[in-house]
Image 1 (spheres, rainbow, N blue to C red):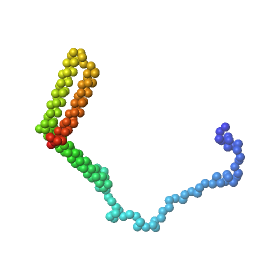
Image 2 (cartoon, rainbow, N blue to C red):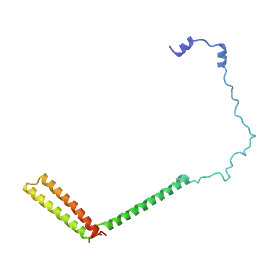
Image 3 (cartoon, helix red, strand yellow):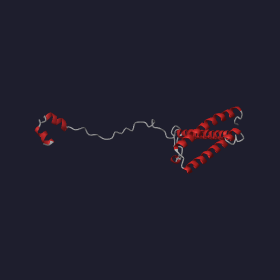
Image 4 (cartoon, rainbow, N blue to C red):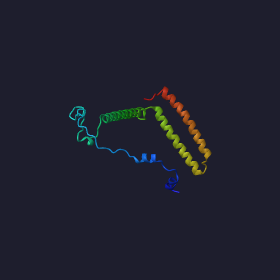
Length: 171
């Protein structure tokens, strides 16, 4: 059943309802024109309070004062970051220069540690190669050698520390 059929079967409209629905809105007579109003309230375009824009405005990189201030702040921050990075690099270079091997190349503790480390490394390498060539190199021997190197390193650390503090302080 369609809507039209359902509406046709329903109650009929009273003549009063039909007359209300038949009336329409009144017609508009036309545009109202009043020439008596003054134009004094309009803005004068020749006055100082109206801002004009230059023709090259859209081609400008910086269009507003807020944008110009932001660019200035960013430039100042970049300059500050650059100067901080330069200062860090210079401090790091000074630290590396002052605490490096070159600065302490005449210190006998540093020289002795370099010689001992080289000799122990060479001795262990040659010994391990000989055991390998004989077929007697095992994980047990490697573990014992590593333990011996560790113990020697601990003793060397404390002896070197005592010498560096008491006899030959670093530069």
